[in-house]
Image (cartoon, rainbow, N blue to C red; front, top):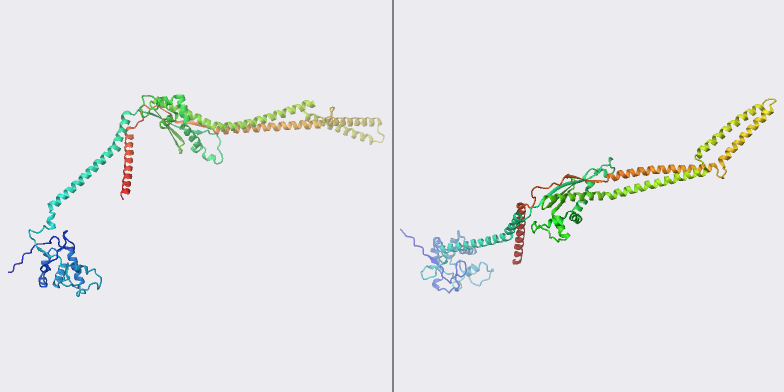
Length: 530
């Protein structure tokens, strides 16, 4: 029974070329003797794959052996078989010249065996061979870093990483405490312990348009009765109540500045005793909040003061100012419309009075009250006389138709006819001429013109009166009224400050600001260091 020889341990000498083609140490490789050039071809043929496995070849050496075998046309079943066959043919798979031949251009060598990938023994530089491990040699790389040392180094690295994490967390906590938590604590402390309680009085009112009793025609009728009809007035009232003019009037009538300059108010909310109108207006803008809802047309007002009675007083005063402003907005168009209607009516009255005076003058001048009636009476007399004359002429004709007419009767009839004709002529002359030289027709014409002028001016007065009544109705329709939906009532509990809500809001603000600054600084650092 044959015993298998015990495998020897090998290591690479320091200063020799390692298995990956480089030097294992800083000392350059020494030239080897002929005895160390490698095993003989007979020994290589006898060398088995198991012995090659025990040499401890690296993966890179095995891959290089496979490439050298492929270059030399050797069919190897494995990397170890490639090493065995190459050594059996006398080719060192790990020789530097052999490796360089893999990338050398074709025909780039002058050696006789270059075509087959072989070199002579004089030109071949052998790779370092394995030698038995002796105590006098340097330790291998595996023994240079024992497992215990590696574990200690890994533990030290982990401890250093944990220490740096703790330090960064501590710095982060310190920054959050300084820039977020401390300001939030100060804000909460102020709102809960120092801030003066403030009382808010809420009220709601709406501006309405007067109903004229008649439906407006055209496009204006579409918006009549809706909030669109009074939207401009509501916005104007809101702007006035938020203006400096309203603040100055409230200060003059009810002492707005003196109220907020009370020493009982905390210093942050307190107004200086000699504060300017600009500083007082800033406080007024914070304490008087007015909003307008265009969908419903409602004005909502909140007035804040240090005591409930003053808050209610300020609210009632501002509502009164709003009513005056509404009246002022509509007073001018109403006055303008009514002034034109009144002036037109007055002018019509004056013209009618003048026409009446002219009619009276003509009647007094001609001493005739009714020229038309007088003319009618004369015309009636002339008509009656004409009929009487016609009857007499018929009687005269009858008398003359007899054989022997009575001359005395004939003469009497003729005399009557002549008298009646003369009377008719006198009446006609009286209608055309008068003693003063003015005919009755002229007087009748002048009097008739005066009467017609008077009647026309009377109609003009009636039309002006109708126009004035219509203007009065239109002016009443343009009137705006301020109706209170929610009356101001003094609160019995403080409305402000809202300590919890304000503290949470302050925390969110400080946290957001810190986050934005952190992100900005990180981006800037990255841009600078890149």
